Image (cartoon, rainbow, N blue to C red; front, side, top):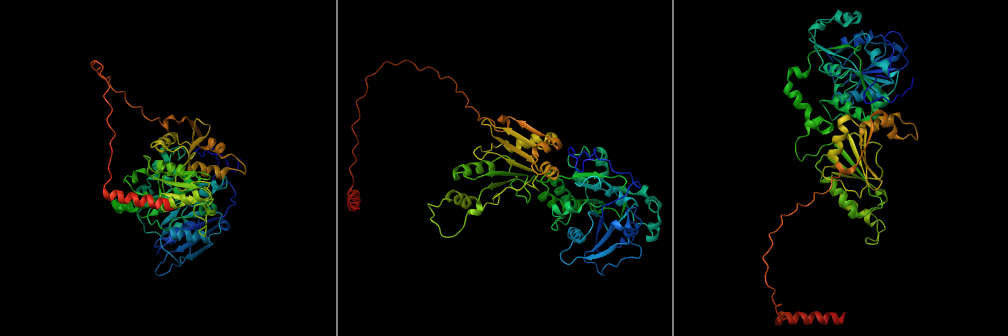
Length: 504
């Protein structure tokens, strides 16, 4: 099997993971558990101590996030379990990052300190990562009231149903989404269900996207999953990876505050949540579209026109990136007017202080975390409706790249970040990224008329009623020229001016 098959969108059907209990794992797993106090931690560790995944391939890192008193490991725990104290910062995101940095495993498994996993949980999620290396696997969970139960009972239980009343539990809302979308194979935004533990992913992928954002204190898993989607991963839910969450979720305790608390974090950082960006005139941390224009060897007047058109479009949720040799500019002594880099300096002085404009020497491989990037000739300014209509086109079928073929043989293109990310993960040196995107997401070519509509023609005026004929008349005598006589004060000024001109 191809170690990196080019899967279409999120359709992981080409993958065939091994059956549970019939294979020999080879990848090491680090289970990262952030904990602040952790009243149910002993049950979580007891369940991990009974896992079917080999002991020598699994370590458990309990990240103590400022617990008072400090966490102590219980007697029943996996063989390779250690406590990692948080030394700076606080919160779930910071704790998970702390554990991931200390992890030795090739796979990072995220788990909470109030979850009890079935015996096959780690094995079920890890088996997919033995097939290919750009996946995020997602476990299932059911919320239950905390029963009176011991760690010993959890450790010896063959199934979760032996010690928990699963029938009375509350299923995660994500399971309905998974069922409706054929196990996420047909999901338009599969990252939506990667909310909260439990999930597993390659350690390299975790660090490639920067880990969790410690500035996000609610909705941190959704924000992290969004960045993973922009990286190009495939999300796979595994129904065999069952777990129970001890206690009802926050949404059940105070739904209004739970929703309101997460909204500002996702509004600023997940541009695809258009429903959260309805406030007019706002600026967001992560823009919806990056407009990339190459200004090398271009006059300031052309660049100014292109930037003005970009900022004046119907779609305002953008950032403009001007690519050019900005590093060549220095602030030392120079001849200002005869400077060979005069145009570049003029552009820098014009645009460097506008928060909507970035000056860089080379465009990044992808615009992540922004979900879209526009590239086009700088001397073809955007129409007010160009971006809006291009995005409307690609969103219909989640096209990876839209290429608009211009009349002069050049092209403008809108690129989907997740498609670019997937292509970069799959590409070998020298590969054409568009050929890969054609397989995974599709490349679409269109004419420019819809995206650069012609200017409206002036409306024809109604025919005027013919004027009555008038007998020709003799031309009037020309008027005599008007002679202006200067005042005394003006004569004095004129005299001074003439005198000054003669002396110059």
